[in-house]
Image (cartoon, rainbow, N blue to C red):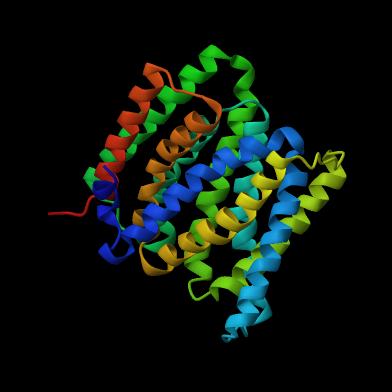
Length: 296
């Protein structure tokens, strides 16, 4: 399945895509692990602050040309606030509200659909008839899972909506990144994006939260994982893939993230999926194959 899913990605980048899917899926579980010990904005402000320092150190150590016009840095920050900030805040508030990591990841897996709808107009990327069929299958599969979850617990309406907010933040940010920041210096640009997200989340703490953090072992592990492995590792891989390929095809592997999230959640928390949710995931996966498959 993973090999077929990566067919829309250049052969040399398939292992990068596999790594991104694995790390990102586990990231949803990292949020679930740490959120009982800190409010979402407080968790995120700390995570992004740590990641910004690590990325800045790497950028300085590499010493490559990072000179950019102020306007270009503005584009880099804007793309980061969408791709990293809005996405993460939406997902964290969703999981804090009771949505399982697998369900939140499955909603975010609609990312290829949103990108494929917007990419032709914004980036001139063509989406064929077979891809549109795949998009509809993916949409149906995700709503099958989401609808079943809401039927079991209608109180999840707002937390589920937060995952959709995260989805649109990620999609808008990826499109913006490709259109305006294609030559972004990877580590310096990511450091600026994480620093701006840390500042934004800090403002969120001041406005909406108490700022209390319980420094348990679980929280230390969670914030370390999210800072280093996800914010530095997974996001860097994503930006490399965006720079090398069409956004509409790079988005395809997102359909596999719920699988990684579900497996990680099952291993750590014993959370499973119902038969209906598994069916919806299979339908969404079938749609992904059609979206990412190359012609011929």
